[in-house]
Image (cartoon, rainbow, N blue to C red):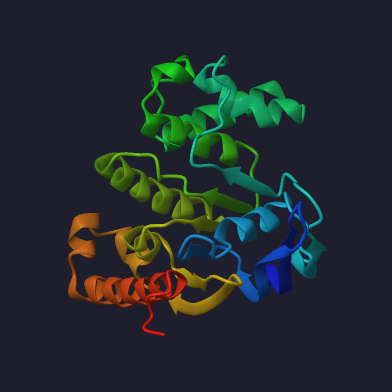
Length: 266
């Protein structure tokens, strides 16, 4: 059964002073349940717009989006969102941030506490449940954001540059955590990133998007996410296969950027 089905989606933004910008044109794909899809491309290619349509924050100008057999017409608990900044409740401690969704759904207290305990262990924060958000590092805050998303048990997790604000070492550790959560939970994940290396390392499927208008230009089926579950990230990223694919995609994106800037020799 297909988890996500995007069919002929267009997105046009109307400008206040007249005219319009076509952010997406004729975007179509089907994504099996349990896949980890990464979206990559130059600025302005519609990555975040597409993610916001999947989240239900935006309604497409044309086309349809289905989760299972149900059309996506707005936000819902079947989809969880993780932003670049954790969007956490600063005035609540870690435990209450994670339990927020189940409490709003009036889940039984004992069940909620058990879920929070399990998630704290899963994301490596079992000793930080009573800490306030401002007492945590950026990497820890993103761990809380991931746990809070998982507490709602969504079918699909949507991530918009979730690791983009982290330092290089923390980012690499968090990439490993994302892979671990993907494998252990079986969730479908769609992740937007500007990092070619991150897109290759995390995605078992990758779309390279092109701008003006935003569209899916290249599709890759990748082995690195599965390999990365058992191999040190640095070793994998230094492998000839990884480097070859990274350079290939970097070249594609560089050519797109050159065309955008008008340096394509025309």
